Image (cartoon, rainbow, N blue to C red; front, side, top):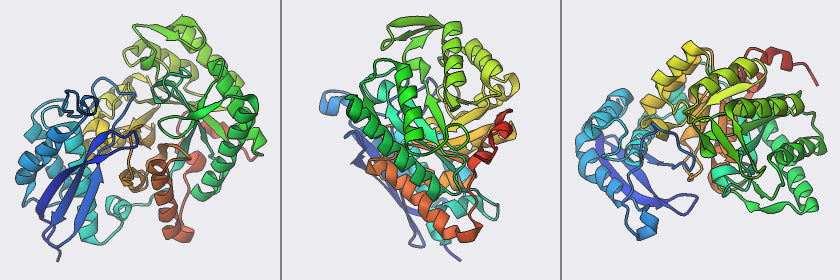
Length: 436
C-alpha cells in the first residue's frame, strides 16, 4: 500500500502569462509520488477574495512574491510534513488555521492555493490515477462545455471596450473536440472581419482580440457575424457569453461606459443588457451589475434569468455561504468557481457543491494571469462542473487547459459524454435545444 504522507514541500518563484512573479509549490510524498501546482492571479477581482501576498516596494512594480515563497518554505512545509496527502480536507483546514486570517493575507492566498493544488496532484499520483479520476472516484462525469473568449475588454484590455469578455459557447457540438473545432473557425472569422474593418489592435490578457470598436455593441454585432461567417447558426448551434464585470466600471448603482460616453443607473444598465439579450444570441451573462448592487442582481435575474445563465463571479467570489444565500434569494442562477478566489481546493469544491445543490449552473474558471498549470481542466471534469472558462483559443497558458481536456476526452473513448446543452440549468434552457 502506498505511503501518501508528505515528506517534502518546496515553494519557488515562477512567472505567469503577464510576466509577473507567482508561486509554484512542489510536494513529495513518502512513496515517491510528486505533485506540482502554480497559483494564478486575477486582474478583475472581487471583494472577499483570498488575497495574494506581494512584496511591495519597487521590485517588479511591487508584485514580487518572495514573501509568499517564504511562507511555503518556512511555515507551511514544516506544518504539513507527515500529513496524509489523500486527506485533502484536513490539509486545507491546516492551511487555513495556520494562516489565521479571513482573507489568507498573512501567508498569502497565492502560497496557500498553490500548496492545496500541489497536494491534490501528489495524492492522485500516489494513487496512480489521473487527477480527474482521483476527484470523481466511481461517479460519472461529463466533459465540460468550453466558454472561450474571442474579444477581450475591460481590465483584460486596458478598457478598450467596457465589457470584459465577449465569448462563444458551442452547446450543439457533438463533443469537446468538435466545440474547439467550431471555435477555431469562429476565431478565424472574427479576425478576418476585424482586419477587413481595420479594427484589430493585437491581443488582450487572455489571448482574445484587442479590438478598436466604436461601441460596446459593435463587438456583439461583429461576433454574431463571425459565428455566421464561420457557417454556424447563432443561438441554436453557437451562443455568446458575456462577462460584463460591471464592478470594473461602476459602483453604488452608477455605471460609466467610457466607450459609449454615457453613465447609466442600475435600471438603465439592466435595460441595455436586456436589449442585447433580445437582439443577439446571448446564452450567458456574468456579473451584469456591480458586486455591491444586490438589488440590481435580483432584478436582472428576475427579468432575464429564464432566458440566459446569470453568473455570479465578483458577486459570489467562490464562497459557499454566498452561493447558499443566492440560492435562497434568487439573485443568480449560476456560479463561477475559481480555486484561488476561495483559497483552497476544499473551499472551491464547497462552493461548487452548494451551486449544484441549488440547481445552479457551475463553471470552473481560470484567471487572467495564468500559467501552464492544468489543474482546473481536471477539476472541471472530476467535479462534473459542466462548463469550463479558460480565456481565449490562443496563447499557450490557455491552450494547455483546452488540450488537457482533449486528452481526457480521448482517454474516455466511447464513454465520453459531452455536457453541451445539459450544462445549462436556467429555466428556459430546454427551449433552446431544438435541432438546428
